[in-house]
Length: 240
Image 1 (cartoon, one colour):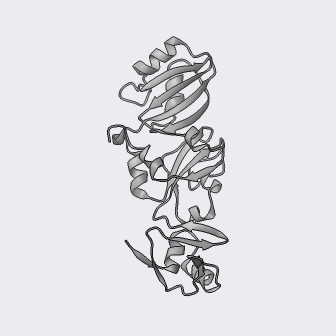
Image 2 (image 1 turned 30 degrees about the horizontal axis):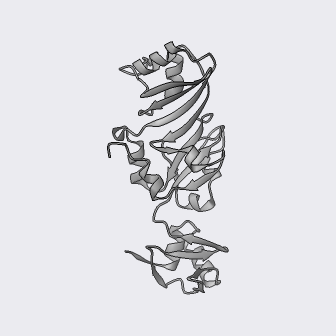
Image 3 (image 1 turned 45 degrees about the vertical axis):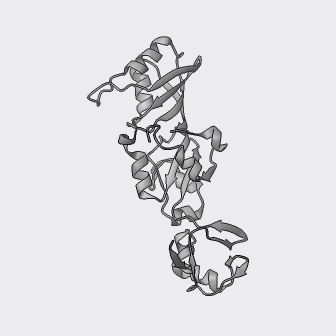
């Protein structure tokens, strides 16, 4: 269990510079256990800590893990070039905490995007060695045929890949929709695989990472939430 001074606690939680956090404390804006604390040097154990600020109760989080239902026309970049960045959809606290996307979704791809300020988590979730499946709902320009499904499952050759890439699962949902499960995260992979199989991806939504689904989270487009321990457990590969 670690203990930190109150100004460091507020700074670590994304409430601004240490100087600004000290001013909030000295102005009587912070309560712990219902009691105003004005000494920024006062130390508190961080485990299980909650504090009141701006008329809200905030639990101390060593790291934050976030799920965003990404809308179209947002870029998964800290320095977007043509569209707004996904970070603009989060709170100011997330920006101060240096939250970053876990991998990327194309600007026109919607759906489940993980984000965190935990570098080890980002690395682990991005690593192809973990074999975490990602589930996509693809809307196609042409009808989904048995031949298309067979090609996606057998593997299609992309011009810059040494070997064919295959979907773990590819099943027809409707005449022009199919569900595709991949373990890799190649550039524009779903779109390029569908093109290589003779179709065109008109729209793409990521609906799950591991066993964590958008349906479980109940997020509308543009909404986000913190992930708790039971959510994070769903992100582990089935073999773990």
